[in-house]
Amino acid sequence: MRILHTMLRVGDLDKSLKFYTEILGMRLLRRHDYPEGRFTLAFVGYGDERENAVLELTYNWDTHSYEIGNGFGHIAIEVDDVYQAVENIRAKGGKIVREPGPMKYGHTVLAFVEDPDGYKIELLSSRA
Image 1 (tube, helix red, strand yellow):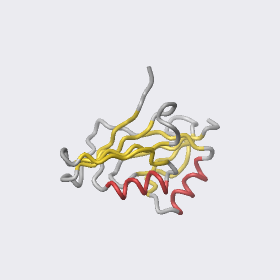
Image 2 (cartoon, helix red, strand yellow):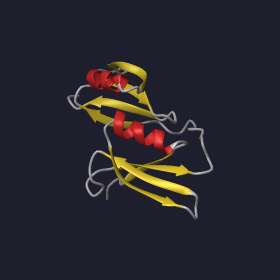
Image 3 (cartoon, one colour):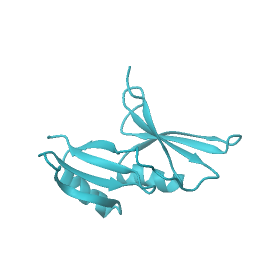
Image 4 (tube, one colour):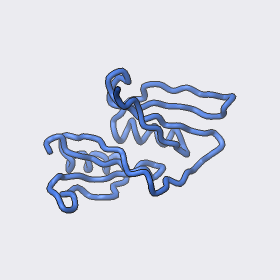
């Protein structure tokens, strides 16, 4: 068994695709419109779905915003250097919600960014 994907409902698919592909560097792996159901599914990730977990972005055509709720935590992405990743994301217009630094009560260096819908993405160094 393995994790296939995590699904996020998004309010503006084009804005979300731009964030995940242009700012976080993922690739659009596949996209399909379901006119009868009035929704679109877009899968993004860093590698082929057969070998990597990916994100499923679900855009319901008639819903333009969601409440994230208090049960969702974050998506974690491994980066070579948290400090450099934050600078790259900031330069591309990404929203940094926690500057890089050691985690509370620990030594692991991390940072958080936020996607257009408010989902938190944790950046962790691969050197940790």
